[in-house]
Image (cartoon, rainbow, N blue to C red):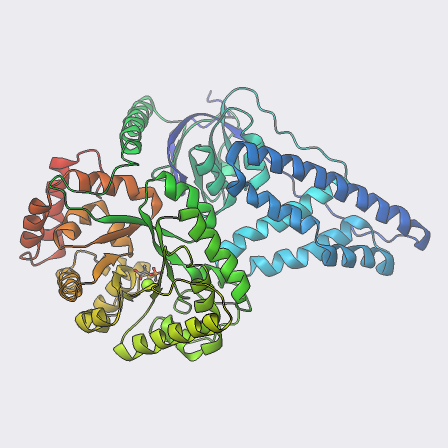
Length: 586
Ligand code: PEP
Ligand code: MG
């Protein structure tokens, strides 16, 4: 008779890889009941006691969160612990709690109901945001609310486990992830969440493998199930067979060795065997990524997507708010360079109240929006300039398609400088200016663009979609979205050659820069800077450091004679298999 409480056959489930590493062990199901809330009326003479009960619950929540914050600071450092500071700020929000206490008194309702309802309004508003980041932050609000409710109902959570296990849960809050890590946690798996979720961010900081967004995993797994969590590929295997187990154990060992070797590269330059140096920097969106970026050995930040400050918001952040954020990043990276891209709003990155367009990718996007909104553009440019006093900041414009746009944008930079000068506020007079080459028209006029600016940065994510007429987010045509399409490669060669002809450096911040299959080719085409997601940085550095520039140039020359994407990939895969058998290129 098969045991009813465990799966007998191997089950494979795909989720989103959130923190690298492979965990093998038993599942621990972490179930948190959603609080059950009943609406109750209270008598006027009971209000004082109800308010006092809530005050106690809030004070207790405060105490708990302070403890968690201290634990986070000691275990993860100030930067990562900020998540819990944000939660404390919600608890200390006087406006919010004034209205909660006010409603208990005026509506004569029980504290649980009013807390649930009032904080629930914020939560719903954040959950309906279009961007993942704000939706993820909605969990902080929910977590604070549930903490207060638990304390009102005097419930305690179990966070002590026996032995080592893989935590499986529908969702994990930041506090859950951290508190559970006091046990011997081998891995985390959750039904929901994305790569920017707290579970993902904290798991990476704690160096514990994690897979998020595994849909119904918490209902599929049973408590005694043995499981494998592959945080590299996002695969979860329940009750693995002996042969799967052996294969994954071997993969775990190989990756461990591989990562040890990669971490040795951290301090070394991205330089070829024959001494050709390139810049290897990182694409960053959230301040929480900075520490990891530095640890990965980045030369700086090649793309800071400033529009993350806007997404899901109804109003633009003020100059002051922006300045604080830019300064934080710039200081954290100093003396390394940080390229701040001005807001690339539009396309798929919409604010709450963005205008609806039939064809947003061909619409009001990037520099087009900012040129039409001088006040907002000047706010941002002043904030960037103010953050540039250490001289490690550059500014970059997205979605440029003409010289006229670049000249207008530069005039705004001059105006912002003038305003700061008049106000006696310091900034880097010689701040470098660059443009993204991500519209085919910009690629065609690369040489002219290069005369206007200090650098070009190729945005292949958009360039490919516009050049090949393939929507970058449409699964139906994803097979046609080809990085190695000869037309794309010819464009890349052209942009690099023309840029360099005018003595500006040419970088790439599109995803292609972080594709190991493209590294030797891009190097051989003469790319000066690779800006990649921090995860892949050591791998790309390893490739660069293992080839000769002379050889890369020869390879690139040959690639340019090939006529189809398949031929290009097959040729490059052959080279990679030969030189780097341990780097996956599929
Ligand atoms: C690009 O288009 O390649 C790019 C880096 O910009 P984004 O992905 O933010 O549009
Ligand atoms: Mg782009």
